[in-house]
Length: 397
Ligand SMILES: Cc1cc2nc3c(=O)[nH]c(=O)nc-3n(C[C@H](O)[C@H](O)[C@H](O)COP(=O)(O)OP(=O)(O)OC[C@H]3O[C@@H](n4cnc5c(N)ncnc54)[C@H](O)[C@@H]3O)c2cc1C
Image 1 (cartoon, protein in one colour):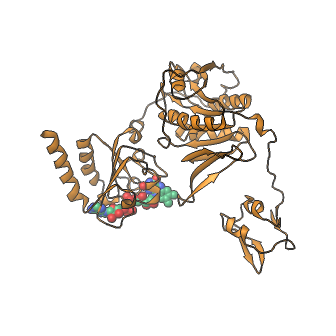
Image 2 (tube, rainbow, N blue to C red):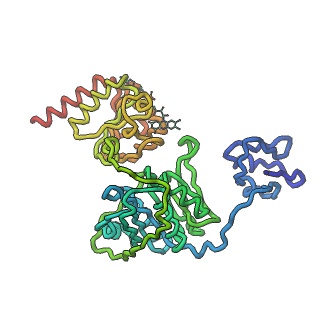
Image 3 (cartoon, rainbow, N blue to C red):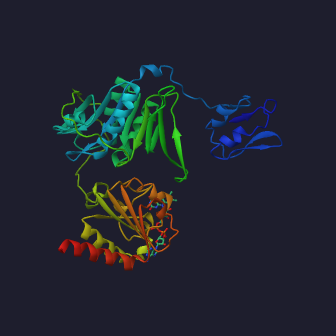
């Protein structure tokens, strides 16, 4: 419970300004706490006259923060290959480790991982903890979670990063929970605070309307997930040296209630808009499912893939694997052509890192033009056929 000491409160309003939930208000010169209070404690921290206290809420404080050291990246390996986000995380992990003056380690869990450990070293890792065992061929939350939790408990890294992929989202929260650590999901920026070496974890909050920077001051490890294509991998450097430490699994770690009967690579998994250099994005301006025929033609003429806004995915015009944005995928192609997409903040959050953005929209004030490098104002059903003719004409000549 949040208690206001009316004797101490001076009604300055600092608590009101700092409450992200609009749960505290100054009335008649005194702070009054409303039902929206989540007991987050941010008002307590900013109250200079110490008029606010949290009762019955214990903050778990680890006293030995200094004993945690090193940056770790969980490198996802599935169906015989490494998830590209692993290399992207090693890129940002290298920067964080250098800023802290510590080692960067990769954790590789799976079966038949072959030369992957060497690949991880070439992309920035100093050490690879390789847990390669036939029993780990198929991912299960329990086994992978137990292996990673035990490794973290033993080696005590200060930072642990993982991809916000289906697998990362599935088991990393459980690992954080077992360790009593916090977890910041879907970070778009990671940096080290100079004063105290804390990890600054930035991510969109409140429907993407603000960017929030989250710090875990009193617990370790500091854990974050990052979506694919947000960070950049380092170039492979064959001359880099590193250590590969093979870790044995225990029968206890392999205990799981899940039995994998079969693993199938679905059609949907084959649609990887994050791997394409050119994306043609379709939105509600396409009018109907049939409108996608036109942008598919444009995509074919340019050797591109087709992506979409959430509006058209929700309408069932195209499948979810094509969705770009806050609740879809983050993409960073060389060229993104947005056709009939308004440019809502949640869509832009997923494509603004594209190298060149072209927007086709009949509304000259559409927000997509704010992020576009080139804008074509007009009817997409007139413009796109002209583009296709031009491209095919150029190919023929
Ligand atoms: C929590 C949350 C998460 C969300 N996550 C996502 C997400 O991940 N991805 C996402 O995309 N959205 C997301 N949204 C939805 C987002 O807010 C928008 O509603 C959505 O992006 C709009 O899609 P749209 O641009 O296709 O449609 P609209 O906003 O309806 O825009 C259609 C555009 O087409 C133009 N147009 C119409 N006809 C033509 C024509 N003939 N020629 C040229 N232009 C034409 C119009 O001028 C208009 O600008 C989310 C929303 C919320 C609340």
